[in-house]
Length: 291
Ligand SMILES: [Zn+2]
Image 1: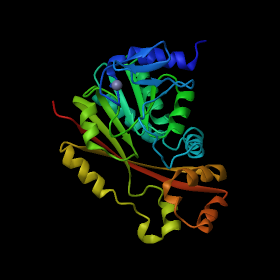
Image 2: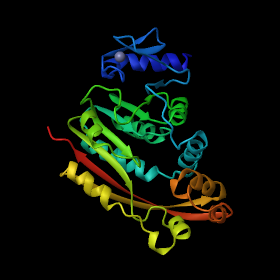
Image 3: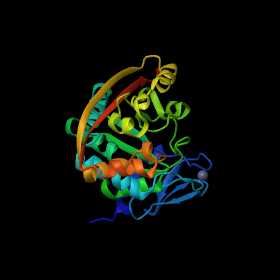
Image 4: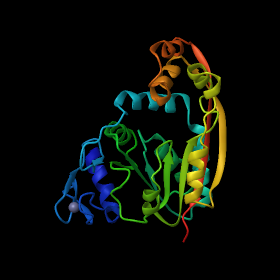
C-alpha cells in the first residue's frame, strides 16, 4: 500500500495545472512526491497525513482538534447533516454536465465535501474532483486522514492557491462569504452553492440560552448580499429534527459557536440532559456566474 503522502502527491500531480503559488502567483508542480513547488522555488511540503499547508504565515482560528472531533462524531454518528448533504448533491447533479471540479471553501474536517463527492460518483463515476480548503490545520489533518480521495489544503480562503476561473462549483457551507474569491474561483457559468442557517436552526438551544426573542435566527442580511452578487439566485429551504442522546448533545454544545459565550450554568443545563430533539434548518442559496 502506498503512503498517504505519496497518494496525495499523485493526486496533486494530476491536478498540477490548477495550482498557483500563494507567494508569487507562479505555476506549481509536485517535486519528488514530497512537495508542491513553484517555478521560483517557493516550496510547500506534503504532510505525511496527505495534505499541503499553503499558508504563507500562521493564522490563528477558534477551531481546534476537539471541536472537529465533536463535529465529526455528530455528523457520522447522528447523521446531523445528512438531509442537507443529499440536497446539495442533488443541486449539483441538476446543474452539472459530465464532470465537476468542486471547491469547498471552509471545508472544516471535510465530511461534507467527501460525502457529496461520494453521492455524485454513484451517478457520474468519473470526473468528480473535490478540493477542500480551510484555514484550520486541525480540520484538514482530520479530513486527509479519513478521506484520501479528495485534495486537502490548509489555505488562505481570501486567496485560495488556484488559478482563476477553474471550478464548476464552489461550496460555502456555514462559513463566511468572500464574493471576490467566489468570482475568482468560478468558471463562467459555474455555480456558488452557499448554505446558511435557517431561521429555525437549533431553535430549542437558542430558546433556552437566549430566551424567546432570539429563538429565531435572522439570515436576511446574508441573503440580500448574496442576491446583490447573484441576482439570479435560487433558494431551497430544508428543515428536519434530529434526536440526540447525551453524547450527541455534548458534541453539539461543543461544536456550535452559539455556546461559546454563554455562562457555564447554562451550558451545564444542556450537558446534563439525557436526550433532546433538535431542529436543524438551512437555506441553500445557489447563484450562477454569468458566461
Ligand atoms: Zn512562488
